[in-house]
Image (cartoon, rainbow, N blue to C red; front, side, top):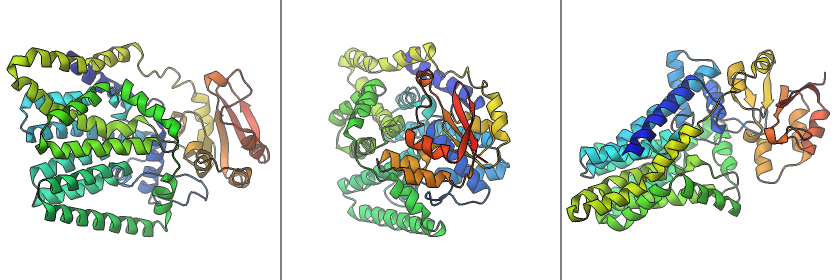
Length: 467
């Protein structure tokens, strides 16, 4: 219990610190802020990434719609305030997800103390440090999937049945991999002899989901299909299996043991949870093995469902009184990683010593006209309140990941000199070498034909249009 309480305290304190003083952005936060700003200004959420500014938005629209709606109602416009808003929204979704886990545990006949422990197991996990409060759509998708599970457990007919359909649709239109909750609910309905309800659930889910996608694709002139489907198709990379093992053995060992115990200990009435954890794990493996996949955010769904399953396991520990001490000792061992990561958090928490060291660069970028092609830490573009194009999120970056990039496409991106400046980051391990890590020979030639080196600093190289 001490490890759980420590984990929750550290999570909330780090959330307060990083929301109030934005640290380096995570990858998707650029996309969140950039396209939320598009929606606030009445511009399309999805664009043809073969045209300038070549940015890809591979994520479904729900998170962007919610953030943009709140921003519009509150009059928020600057990138910095949009970033803070998106992080607050994710933190709210995290706390609501913990409450949903509590309610699901209560629905599974667990008492208040046990249900509260299940919520703490979720909140205290080190996986939530940053992922629990950064501007990403993963947590809100996790929340919607938990609400879908709670709704179908609450009632397989009537209002709660329709709410379950709605939440399942909101989950997949927040993050594509959350289709697992739909599959799990259908299997649950079939296993509980609710065949008509299973067919009904499938019909509503597919018809409404497809109708919404067709409408979204129509109003974006086909760009939704390009961004949500084409940009997410990729070949498998077997080497990413190392990433899967890393997260299984470093961040989630106790949760995976809880899942294995639950699969054997819990009876047939828990078929919904068993199906959900199985298919969510399959989705993690499939998406992680894709080229460019393997992020820690893929594991949020597995973390949430393992926390839900911990409730009934704790109940059984308390029920078998003769073996109480043995079970409690085993369960305490499972929670040891929470204590270990809490101590590690104290020793090496996220630092931001160099956050304000780029003040001169911020002032320079603020005076640049047009877009900035930027590989440096994205906090600078937030402070400068400038639209930025990061290589990894462009069609060029997509081709590089798929191994199909050539000089001609890069030259065509740069020849019109539409970028106000180009900045490349030099990581510490490259500062004694010739130049930036991502500045390849092909990219260097394309830049040299259209841009000139304006500044060669310790951390970055800055190029301006040649004229």
